[in-house]
Amino acid sequence: MAFHGDLSSYPLPDLLQWLDASRKSGALSLSWEADQRKVFLLSGQIIAASAPGLWERLSRVVEQTGEARGDRVLAALKRAESLGPAIDSSIRQIAEEELVGSLVDLTPAQGRFHWSEDSDRGEDEWVSLELPLRHVLFETLRRMDEVMDVERALPHEQLVLRGAPGAKPSHALHRAILGVIEASDDVTLSRIRLSLGLARSVATRAVFDMLRTGRAVVVGAAPIESDPIADMLEKGAILVRERQFDAAALIFASLLQSDPGDRRVREFARMVEREHVAAIYRELPPVARFEVTDNSTILSSLRPEERSVVRSFQAGWDLSAVVLASTQRELETLKTVMRLIRMGALTR
Image 1 (cartoon, rainbow, N blue to C red):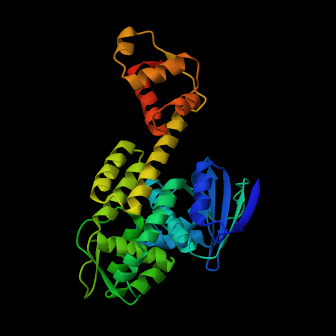
Image 2 (tube, rainbow, N blue to C red; image 1 turned 30 degrees about the vertical axis):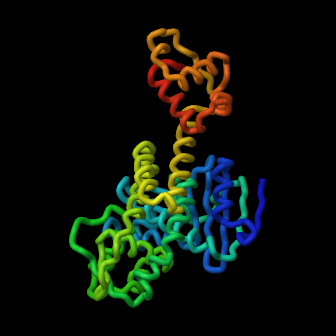
Image 3 (tube, helix red, strand yellow; image 1 turned 90 degrees about the vertical axis):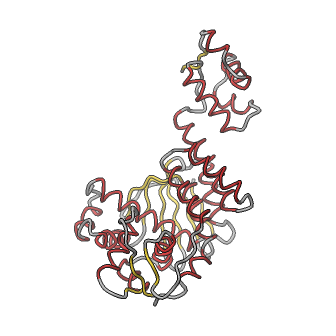
């Protein structure tokens, strides 16, 4: 199935939410006046992204980190070869930043989209990724909420930047920016953007994150105030990427107590829950059925909600039917099933 349209009638966040909820596989092409992108999906997960000139941009940024020469990176990207775990990780980090930055630019723009279940990459300049679509959507919405904060901190491109003392940042794009700053004196935001070859929004956002975490300073300006909620959301998103869902849920609970009305917090909560549900379904298919143990000691220790789930499986139901019939929320029911498996009450 293929379809297309314009993003004024079908906003990009809604389109991404539909693709995520439907767990679609295929290719989403996005085009607008300034640029174009293509995102390749497999069951709702981003497995690759492409754009004109992508390889050259990635090569330039990696070279600024000092990890590898740009021509070597470019040659490896063209041949789809690995440069080793560290450099491959840097390439993915930079590609992810560029993808999210392009979606932030596109969301308010008058662009067009085309969806196709044909995921042939053809002659596209693409790079492999491993990203949950809902994580990208969450990051896009979060950064849109913070656009005005970025503009206030970095109102024009002639601002002079300097690196702050301390350990090298963990993100490859931030290391590349420090590489540009350290190469000469009085480096402006414009110089950084041109040296990296990235869109202004991508470079500016990365510099803003460095200012907020104390990795860089604007000459002659007071340090920007830290946004603790944004910092915790960023840490929570990293935990979700690492599939540490319980830890991410604790961050959400803390944020909810401090600022229950913040839209970013609500979006984060939805992202964590959906990604946790999807992760469990990847381990336990909805059609899975389970045998119930005959160990009376285990069965006698079950809580009421656990006994209800056990009775459903004893009746021959599959996982999807158990979830639908449960009075608990989907995630809580799935976590109950996982707990019963760990206890030995259920076996496949």
